[in-house]
Every structure is written in C-alpha cells, then in structure tokens.
Image (cartoon, rainbow, N blue to C red; front, top):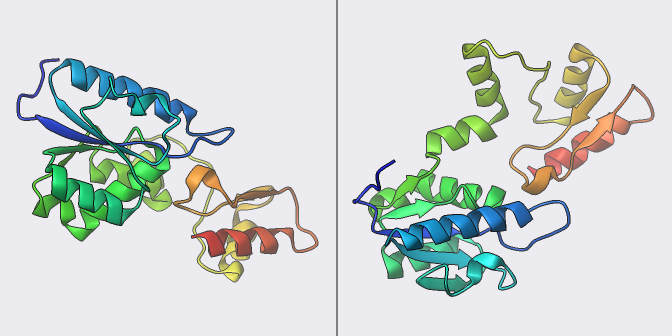
Length: 201
C-alpha cells in the first residue's frame, strides 16, 4: 500500500503500565508501528506513562513524552506538537478511551488531527455492547443471548430472561475488570457482581 503523503506527523498513544496478563502485546505492536512510521519518514510523537517499554526507545520516535496518559496531558502535547494524525488503536483500552473522549469533545477536529488506523465510528461499534450486537446481527453473525443493565434489578431481570449461567461485566473498563461468572441462582452472587460492575462503569 502506498504511503499517504498527507500523513507527516503522527502522535502515538502508548499502552502505559504493563501488568500481568495485559498490555505487553500493545507495547510490542506500538513499537512496531513507531518503527515503520519512523522508517517511512513520518515524524513520530510518542506519549506513554511507562519508561520501561520498548516503544520509548529513542530510536523509535522523534519526540517522546513520559507523561500520565490523561486527557489533560494528551491535549497539552497535541497543542504543542501539532500532529496531523493520532494513532490510538495500539495503546489498548487506554488509548481508545482517550481517543474517543478527544473525538467526542471535538478537540481533534478543532486542531485538525485525524484519527488513523481505527476511526471513532469503528471504535464505538467495537466497545458499545449494543452497537456491537446490532452490527453482528446486520451481517448475520450469531451472538450469545445478552442484555444491558443500568441497575442491579435490571441485571437480575436480564439473567432471568436469558437463563443461567451468566457473565456479568461492566462496559468500557480496562482489561474487563469487575466482571464475574454466576453459574446458577443462589446467595446473591449475581447481585454482588452486578453491584461491582455498575460501580465500575
């Protein structure tokens, strides 16, 4: 595929802290993306809160910011560096969440920054459980019975409707934290999982 010559300066959002079971693959993928962009002559601006990653190697990016992966930090760096593109899909949930917040606020549009790799509409479809279910149904792809609950009572009603066992998990959390399995009705298990999940949303 030919290089898009309009892409001259890309900000890459890193994966942040690496914990057991997640994020190491994002560091590897992000490092490869930085290397390829850099080799293609694209100016690479990397923001990552974790200095102990491969992608923070000086050979992989032109500018490296070891900053907290927060909306405030990312906005400040965009204002200073003025990238034309943002690559967030290789930073795991952290990068995707930041990109979606920047897009919804209109910050990216105000600063003429486009989201590359995965656009906001695709991220929404992948992260929003109802949108994902609708997208799968539209292409004839089966999905397991499910439902969305905003209260404990709604979670119990969904479990009764679809039947046990159920997996109760919050949406939009890092690494799927807060979920739990309930094999059968009993002793308030689903109530506890639902409370935890709703608290984490």
